[in-house]
Amino acid sequence: PRAAFLLEMLALLSASIGDDPAALDYGTRAVGIQETIGQGTVALASALDALGRAHMRRGAFTEALACFTRRLRIVESAKPDSEAVATTLHQAGLCCLLQPDGARGGIPYLERTVALRRRLHPDAPQTALALAALGWALESAGQEEEARPALEEALKLIERVAPDSADHATVLLMLVQRAGAGESLQQTQRALEIVQRQTRGDSLLMGTLHVEVGWCMVRNGDLPGARRHFEQGLSLAERSALGTFCSAWAREGLGTVAVAAGRTDEAIGHYQA
Image 1 (cartoon, rainbow, N blue to C red):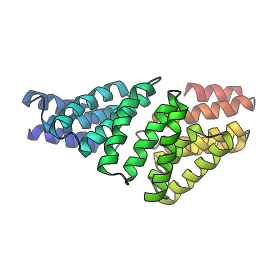
Image 2: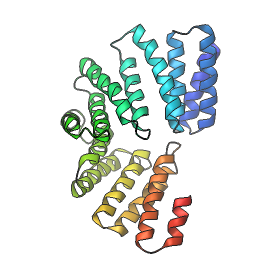
Image 3: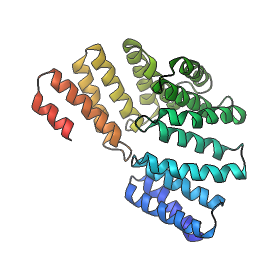
């Protein structure tokens, strides 16, 4: 048990410094040891959480979902109405949502997350984040009418309990999916300003927001402004171990701007990177 615990801690530490291969290796070994001890232990659930997070960091959402669903069975049997269950449900829902055409599969997890968060912490930022994720999933699944109340409640709650926080910025970013071009730009710029005040200036969330502002500007026809934000977003994403998808998103934006400006070779370079 002690060896498994140390491996789990090494997995978390490796993830914190961006060493994803090491995090995956340590997490896999920790789960393997815990499985030999017992299939339904809290220690195994903890190791599965570390391994699931390692898979998420590398974009392996199917593998991460498998870890979180196994963990969910364990923590639910131990204490159904617990923070561990709420967190694991949210992670499972995000794993579905972040896969192509996976939003519909994430809705049941996120609906359960919201229900449990309401019972545990009705006025907490985590509840607003769960509502926003549920709204995003519903919107992505084409259920716009069902999405609207969740997203509106998420915004009202986060503005009441944690205004001008990173969580507030995250909720605004999720709300951008349902806004028009002009409103999207305004909301995303507001979110970016919040994060710029709250962080050191090198966060992945800030990079993501720069890229989202860039795409809003593309839709509004401001290609020079879009390029500046894509470049800033790419620079921030490349400093983060979690920035693979944000980097690709930024490069796609830079390629789009280059095509519009007739710089074909530059566009090809971005698309191939």
